[in-house]
Image (cartoon, rainbow over all chains, first blue to last red; front, side, top):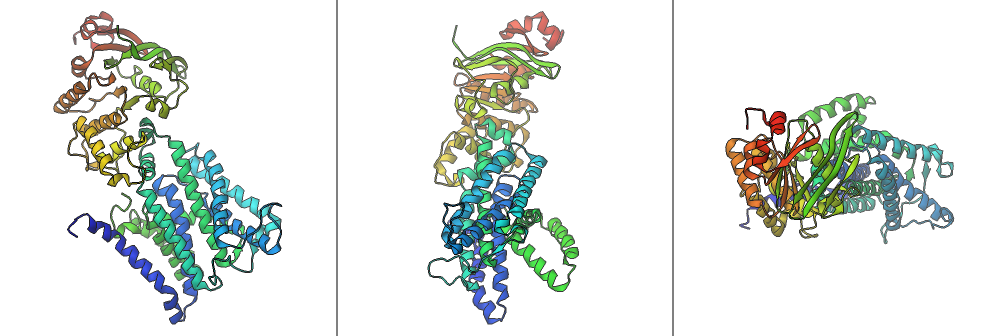
Amino acid sequence: MANPRSFPRFKGWLLPGLALACLLALPPVAQALGQPALVTLVTRMMILGLAASALNIALGMGGLISLGHAAFYGIGGYAVGILTTHAAAGAPFLGFIPGSDSLALNLLAALVASGVAAAIIGALALRTSGIQFIMITLAFAQMVFFLFVALKAYGGDDGMSFRRRNGLLDFNMRDDATFFYVSLGVLSLWLALSARLLHSRFGLLLGGIRQSERRMQAIGVNTFAMRWLAFVLSGMGAGLAGALMANLGRFVSPDLMHWTQSGEMLIMVVLGGAGTIFGPVLGAFALIGLETLLASWTEHWQIFLGPLLVLMALTFRGGLARLWRKGDAS
Amino acid sequence: MRKPLLVIDDLVKNFGGLRVTDHVSLDLCAGEIHALIGPNGAGKSTLIGQIMGEIAPDAGEILLDAHPLSRLSQAARVRRGLARSFQVPEVLAEYSARDNVSAALLARGAGSWLKDPRADAGLGAQADTFLQAAGLAGRGATRVSDLAHGERKQLELAIALATRPRVLLLDEPMAGLGPNESAQMIEVLRKLRGDVAMLLVEHDMKAVFALADRISVLVYGRIIATGSAAEIQADAQVREAYLGAGDA
């Protein structure tokens, strides 16, 4: 109690703890208020918050401005879509991979598929830096986008839907509130992992590479390998988010991989606070919240959203997360 | 004669039509301080870059303990005992001085794999010993962006020392330092003499004469003379090319 260092630590977790309590209480409150759609909206916010938090590992911790994370997000989504429809049809994918409608298995498949894609794209893209890196990640994501547009077997341009959400234990996954809690659980686990990563040997060295790659090379760090690993972890997180999003709407389409989706993730990270744990999630809540609010007022909501984002970026330098806690990243 | 630890053998490097390293050969014995002096643009920093593996030479070889380095990555060279400091400090500005040194310790595998390195008291204590050796005792918690230029130069040295080098390549450690800071840096380097071999690239002749066992003079990419301080001061070619006729 007398330890002066324990207070900042406690303070740092106070608001996220309160936020968690509010989220836990949301489904029954929304039900009581007669606003069941709020549960789905907040689930979407949490899933996109997970995607933004995943991008943050590459962007905020590693300084890698990727404009291609929608590809990993989409691949995660399609992993669920493809395995679920193959399970329903009873035919194995590619002739030997059995379909699955288990959420745990499909999330794992999404992690693997998006991880492999990120490993390949990262290995090539990380040979460049700066603006070239942005462009090459965008180019790869567009290639993946058009690949899925051309995949007529899985719906092509129209995408594909499936009847039921993937199952988890004996939970009733049809219930939006149940799926809300599952998403909250996955997001919480991911954020705990991110926090651990930021405060690890890997996090310290990765942050060093972001500040001066030359310095880190001079002390013997294999900077390429570390950036690549950060990129792969980041891609896997985006894939996980895509898998949840596919389950939320029981639908996947190439729209998941559209480059504007990558752009939105970037906005969420920057708006919320790059390099912080909770910032990207906050950014996702702010952006989706604003979009929803403005869209309910006018169909020309984007005209208002743009200037608002500019205003927020100018007002909250370093992101929304810095408002309550300075130096969250350190 | 002592066996040389680092040997640079007939190194050549061209940038387009400009030859920046022109058949350079020099060696460095264990524990020795070998100063490399020369006018701006003589190719001193390029030479350090080639030894570290940042720049690939066009011809020639660099040997550490008789093992050729040319095929080794920078990380592998650091593992074998090479370290460098930068003329303009390359330090991690958002981190504390201690974290800068901790990064170097972590890079060579020190510290616990499970603990948060910032909460690892053992690692922090190790980092502090290197900060102390570089004259930065008590500054560990200071954010690097709040350090003065001279302190950043000292931090450069602490980071390099934390990699436990056998050969330290110092790129103008006195550059931008005031007289008191220079004197302090000379004292710090003097204390390290014998423990680690140093290739000292430096313009500050007071520091060079105070520290160097041997001096080589590099002009337009060529070594024009190597010898003791007295020999270099007496060399007519050196006086002409670098020190200036009335300077020595």
